[in-house]
View 1 (cartoon, rainbow, N blue to C red):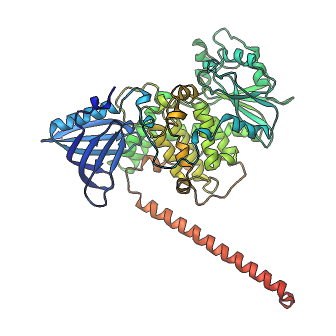
View 2: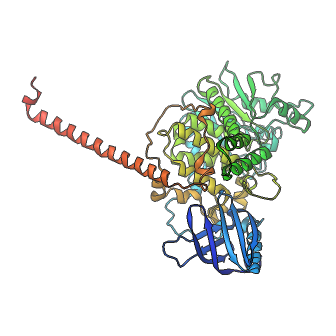
View 3: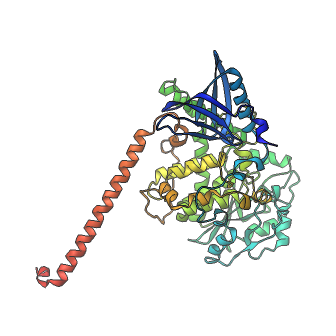
Length: 549
């Protein structure tokens, strides 16, 4: 298919662009296969370059002979284009709708994008499973890297290489895979260096109504227990939902077959409930006609902060089991690709200071989301404005990023990265020129040859000038475990995402610049103090009289 077939009117002059908190711009609107571009001859005006894949929905209306197109984006911004001429307006809106809903992944912009920067570090090779395993080998010899899934046949959503207990062979893994939903057998998620406890993740066991049993599965998870120790299975579903899953062939681990494991059920919502919550939240944030009380009640009715609390509470529980109880943990829900990953990755943020660095957080996203098989292609295909009926869309990754922001806000000196890094990941998960978030699992990325045909987001992020922009000026390495508060007054609305386009950031920008200035000035004074101390020490050694009482 040629993009030209979908572009009925490639260029229109005299188009007026309206954006929040920016002056209106008049210029020429151009449509390309991947971008909506508005350029102007006016001085000091920034061009608009908007990826079609970032467009969630459009609305059109007519005032006389001028058509208005309201473009609602996946990054939650809303812009308006005033287009002279009814025919031009209809053609442009039709083309935008067609180009923003292309089904074929291989037609997306990352396959056509050519970087304008020098790729110093190829992000596709930055966080390979074998490199992460070398770090694990330096701490313990109880695990091995298995290639049982090298052709993705044992578990279609797992990567080629997975870490499993050393004494469990590949034949056992294959049997366990038939007993777990989607073949997602228990694999290592995190090794707690402090006490050698581990966190694993998987999908639900396929016990069904007959109480099916798999001795290989029991052997696999028992292999992670220390003699005389118990473990915890954290199921991210309510007991009722887990019981109902039996009727569809799923289920949970029974105490009779897993006597050394204590099962805990925590309710984390999925799919449609989360998508509806996001839609209600964005609706409330965009509606500025309400009184404060009415606005707060709409915010509460969205249940977004309730979901944040549920996820953080469960992550804290997993971290507590590992760090304070000295017990190993298995986390799963139904498929093990959504709430499971929220819990395992947040528990690592709490426990592991390495995950709070820029590179460490990239590694965490790569390991616990991309390689672990979170279906980004389905979950992020629509955002809060889409008119089409939700299928498998859900803001699972955005909720995770919001939880990280909550912890960052409570521990502002413990993270090497700033809020901008989290916002950047949100934007690129929904629409990007990079191939990192394309596909839904490692098998998809291999089939699409993404490392060969697209550029990695990490290649761009890890350039010195970009790292400088994403670095938190307050950062001081903290090797301690950080326990976030989940009290209602501790959890705030993430304004940097949800109110970003609804109010001017000028005051916040000025405050941030002032903070950076104070930090730099403090460093200068500290250097002066150190220099004067050195001078005094030198004088004291040269002149013994200075030391006399």
